[in-house]
Image (cartoon, rainbow, N blue to C red):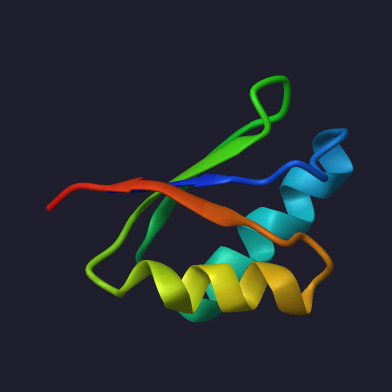
Length: 69
């Protein structure tokens, strides 16, 4: 599991953009967006950097909080 801090999440529309970006990196990944907590949890075998780069490309800079597994 990868957990990212995404400070620019403000609403469900933001969450939708983030889910789409994650799905484009790994279609089999599960993605949980916590709007109030401004965090994203992704279950994927791909490295966190892939998701950080994808979110930055769609306007949501993020930082890695933790990666487990």
